Length: 314
Image (tube, rainbow, N blue to C red; front, side, top):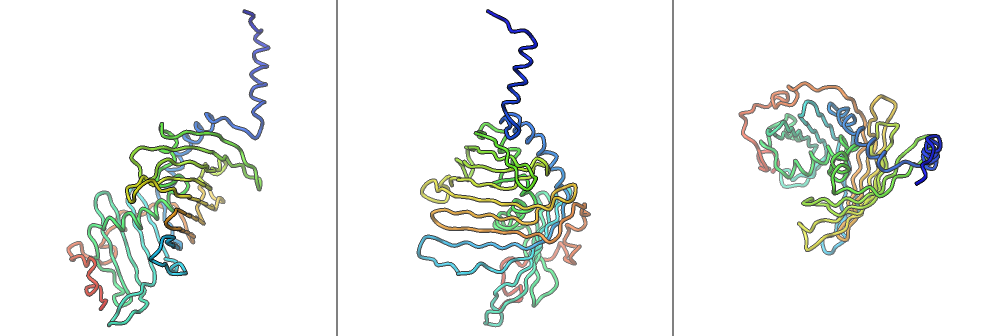
């Protein structure tokens, strides 16, 4: 066996590193650097206060059940998260039946989740003062509104398909197939193609790609994937083509999502969501602002629930 001199070995190692080129990165290095950056990114978004507009539309592709031709008007949203507490405010014009006639009524909702405790407040054009509607919040509102605002806006830089990227990329269910470097507008992005096959999740057998921006705290910028519904809501696995696009204001120390678009296409429907933020800061919110009393509501007040008459709607 012929041994190479140390100098030759060193030169070979240098040549091996050079063969990667400036536009390549190993999968191992990408995962190591990305997973190291995600805890710092998550910590940066612990205290946030956000406002903006949310538009959502769903069009069924299966007949019958035609959908309205235009999406509903955007809702103005506000999100506060601080110390593990979350508060959401939604303002929109609702079509309600008042005195036997359909009218457009300004409606505002407050939803608070503090550990195991939660409540919901409501005010309408007929009752401009907030009143207790739910205690606790119905599961439908938690999943359909609160979770959507967190995943779609607050945690958009570090979450995809309802899963934190730190969890998605770290387990055995994740396989990184390739990583390439993209250069445009003086900005470098990593594009990762992957397969994700979790067990017991609603969406499984996920494959596609996502891009992150290492020079901007490793925020998630874009993703295009095919994910399969596990059949819990139907006869079998249903493929979903999902595209996500996030835009950021990166003039400060922490990037702020400014525009977020999400599109889900399956054989049954096309769903779209878009969020446009108008303000965003990282200040801590005092605990007292997550209470009913801060809105002039007594904890002993009986919840209105879905009782339309109690809300002033006839």
